[in-house]
Image (tube, rainbow, N blue to C red; front, side, top):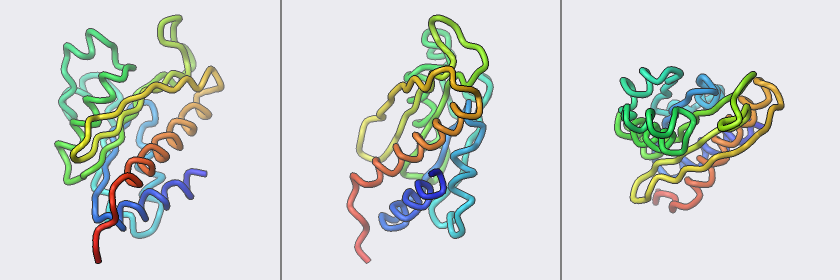
Length: 165
């Protein structure tokens, strides 16, 4: 499924003349890999940020220490700052961000399988959401998060008009 979604994202970005970037934590770069597995992706894929630690989120993406302390790394607030930071630190018009608990583990407050996503794009507020994939295993959560992020990018790109040729 990810290969088809990645192709749709890249085709949509190409048709609209925009670059995309990723900011990933629990997926460790899986979205960027899915996109760059497609030949010709360099025309629209600017870069990917893998920010697994809180320090990396702060250093590479500008996530605020206060946001991390108040909401925790697995939160829509942090995902939103990750997406905004990736967009600001790249040549991309659209950024998708992912932070979550792939497992094993978690807590009552933040269970295994909880993943927060955000999309940042031009002329629109950052959109964030949380998906509960459940305790279905690390690999399954990560793959589902990758595919969900690709679908969010495809949806965001579908809302802008293709560039005139």
